[in-house]
Image (cartoon, rainbow, N blue to C red; front, side, top):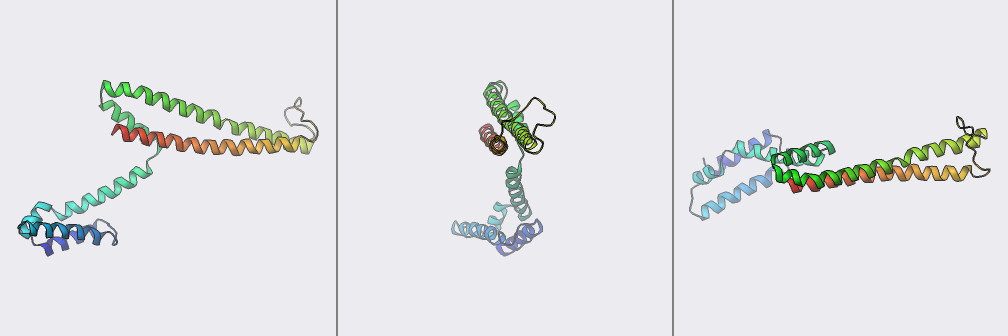
Length: 189
């Protein structure tokens, strides 16, 4: 197969497989450089094309690479955990021993996440109590709970702070877990 035939078939295969028009010229220039380097070594265009392989297969590899990049960016937390555990199972006893610190750190992070996220319900109850005290003079459902006079606004402020802080902590811990899973996943592979 001549260079022109190889390049046109590669371009056609790349388009058929959904590679964007912006990427195709870059890919074609890479393979054009392969042909130029092969000619400098004294090889014929047919030999170079044979060495490079089937243009259809090359296009499929680009699609697979593109899809694997998108998948790794979009992986969820539980899918990462599943892959990590699967990789550790394949490693035998050595990987099983390495699993113990992974599990302990993960449990610690998850415990902190749950504990710190528990701040939000306290904030919600405080908000309910403060507003209820302002409106009715008491806390509905909790007749023994009395907030001192003029402290309702302080209770509402503290409650909103707890809700906001707890929410931010929950979001932050989610990203801590994802970062830890990414770190461990990269170490396992």
